[in-house]
Image (cartoon, rainbow, N blue to C red; front, side, top):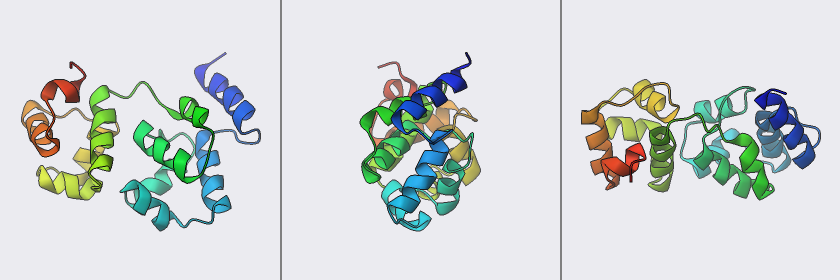
Length: 152
């Protein structure tokens, strides 16, 4: 059985009528009476980014999923079905640090002087920051390079 089928089976035991975690999140936003802009305020991301998370097949970062679970009052074990462990550790940590600091993707990209799409690629694991950029990020968040890269 493929990983996606295992996830869907496990998700169906947690939330029976959903085929993907994305469907669950979309439905829960409606059920809880939130507009996308309101959810974005809790997550520190743009509405466009949030709406991408509601689309099937889009990976939801663990830090974002953690906030959504609390916001929508979902079972804590929901997170195991949503996390894509294939994301590099630096992607997971950059997203978590940005959320902790309550910054948007755009604010962070401006602070480290890279394009918004470039920075978004770092958090989504589609791009790898160079050493100069990693140093800027480590300084911005007051963490070590070892922490950012998972070597701590």
